[in-house]
Structure formats: C-alpha cells, structure tokens
Image (cartoon, rainbow, N blue to C red; front, side, top):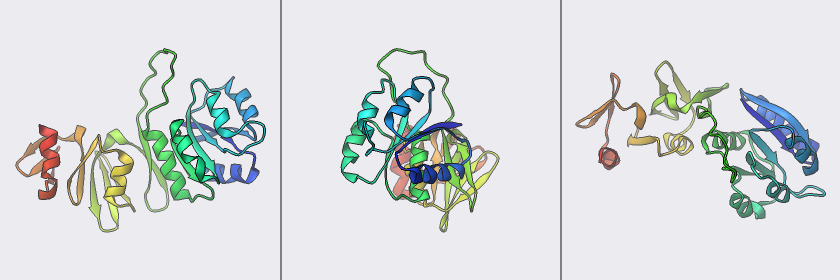
Length: 232
C-alpha cells in the first residue's frame, strides 16, 4: 500500500491526481492539502510514503517546503514550470511531471517510486523491514501490481513483452527495452534480442543457453559479452 498526500492550491489538480491513483491498486489518499503550511501540520502527526507536490503555491513555495522536512518521504513534483527541474533533482525528487501530464507518464513516475531507494535520514534510526519492490504493469485494460523479485524473465512478442513469473505470464504492451529501463539493469540482464533474464533466477548457464528451472533461454551473439561479465 502506498499512502500519499497531494499538496496543490488548484482543486482540479487534486481531482486529476486522485483520479489517476484510483485506477491503480494499493494507492491510498491520506490528505488533500491546499498549501504547504497545511501539509506541514499534517506531516507533524502522520507519516506518508509519497507526496505529490506543486511548486507555485502561496505563502511557502514547493521547494521551500521540501527543505523544511528533515526526513522527507518520496516526492513527485507536479508543476507547469519546467525551469525548476534541475533544482528538483538536486533535492532528490523521484520524478518531475509537467502539467498537463498523461496517465502513462504518471504511471512511469509511480513505478519510479516503487523502484527507487528511500531518502536517507541523517539521524540514525532502526533499519525498517525491507518491503518487496513492486511495479505496475498494464495487461490489456487492467493495471496489475507485481513484485519484481517474482519476475523470472522477459520475452519480446511482437508489439508486446511477456513478463514471466513462476505461476503466470503477463502480456504488456511495451518494448522489452522500455521495461528493462523501468525494472533496472542491475537485476535484469538482456541476453538476446528477444529475451532478458533476472540474474537471481538463473539456475545454470550451459554453452549458449541460460536455464531458469526447466526453461531454456538462448544467448544471442550480440549479448554474449553481457553474460561473460556476469560469470566473470
């Protein structure tokens, strides 16, 4: 469950963001805040996982508000002003959405929040229990949330990519290269023009084949160096 708040002085922005979030499972709105001072009061009493933050607000601007937080949650900036993007990334925001933004662009930002590391506090705290990293994928019309650790391999199939786990296969209308960018190259390795594998699910490598359980994945000539680096 991702618990979030929206900080924006425009009512229509709240409606759009909440409408997008309502299309996804496990998104829970905790508070609509219409200025930064209202958000500070709420955050003093409640922790959240994610903030949708507008920049051009009365009294206290978005980035000025963000600098007041000693241990900020993940932040997605939603604004009409592109010129502040660099400053946002210097403040470790997860993503920077320029209004108006599509649902597809919004979904990519949400997936970044589930895949990115939490912002570190300068104050030592007990290590929290590690939550499974998840990602939202669109299978036809519904959006499905899956744990990345369960994905064994990806297989290109025309205009779709099959995302294969131990117990199911999802057909996603995205290129394999786009999914790899979202999933993260540190855990997934492209081994063929049509295949990418999860490193942690590899059972063995024999000749030009990778085995994941009983499944054989071919190693393409162009990608053989990727496998060689993996095995040292």
